[in-house]
Length: 234
Image (cartoon, rainbow, N blue to C red):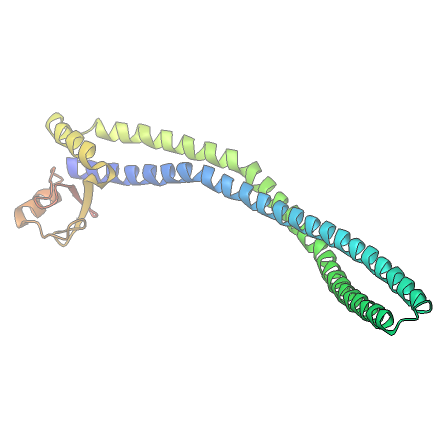
């Protein structure tokens, strides 16, 4: 029958495995949320692109209306020039025509810029749509495997918990009391392996007698850090 030190080693192995499984279980919802956020980000990017295209089209239309209005205004002013006899009024109207033409040129430049941006954003749309489609496909794959993987980890954790309980039941009553206090105080950190008489937790050398006791599979605690010790070759 294995001595307390060998049992402690096996309990530590099982508790480390249980801790890893619980870490995966706890992290799984965060992974799911990250996948959902990835889809939401891609959808938001596509939505913003559609909104930008929509605004550009409205802006271009408004510019076209302004261009038409400016053209008509210039024609009216040019017709009025024929009826003006006063040089002062003539010069004033010519200045007004120049101002409208300058404004018209600026509007036309803005229109060309907006049309260029519209063309660029429209060309990007298929890529954004493909990104949304891919993100949804990735999420569907993750979600399909998520629950089965999570269930598997939970089942493994519960099975390991039973194995831990079975190993703990093998500990002598006096050892079990000390064991329970150490685990309650330090949890998964209540254990440490020993190699070449060095505690792996606090790196303190144990006495030759304690090292001998470990080789004899006896229950030993580190006098420096209070952890329950075992040797890897027990």
